[in-house]
Length: 213
Image (cartoon, rainbow, N blue to C red; front, side):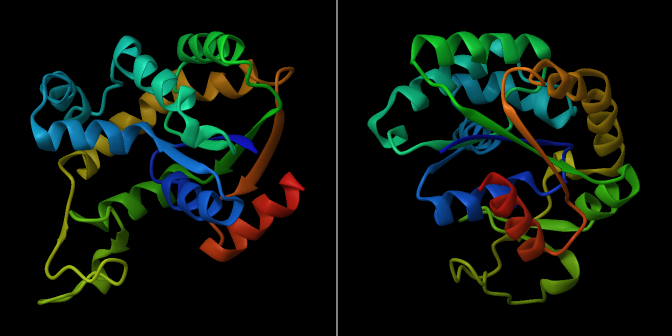
């Protein structure tokens, strides 16, 4: 199965993508994770992307598109994939369509998670991320000398710089102006599913799988 998961920052795309990838035995392609790894490693790509990401802006298409094509060309994508974080603009959607054509990828399904800006801002402001495995938890669940429930690493949770409230508001503004039109681009090109992203994680997952089937 080939899926693009779509929605505003903080709506739960990453969480659902990981769960769906596991349940459907497909790979999770997260451009955000790839870029964060590059930033952490201070690679040339990471240095270029760091300032852009921390300001809440979009990373240039030429940086992201090459990564996507390489991953989708790999043998590990044979069973399918769930693409998380790309495309974020109509131009990226056009680029991705060309990549799909070049790689003979068809029958792609689009999943869109919906939530209000108020709920998204509250989620992001109060979230912490495990530096080892990327697991996300509400800060109220992370105590002193806390072991990550996913990878068991001690005291690994931190707040991303791009999770500052002002940066979040800027990211949401960018999303409304540049990313929401992508959904319209796919209206006649892919099966589209819209799901309420404010429900419990398990409920959202079940809704998506039911709609996909």
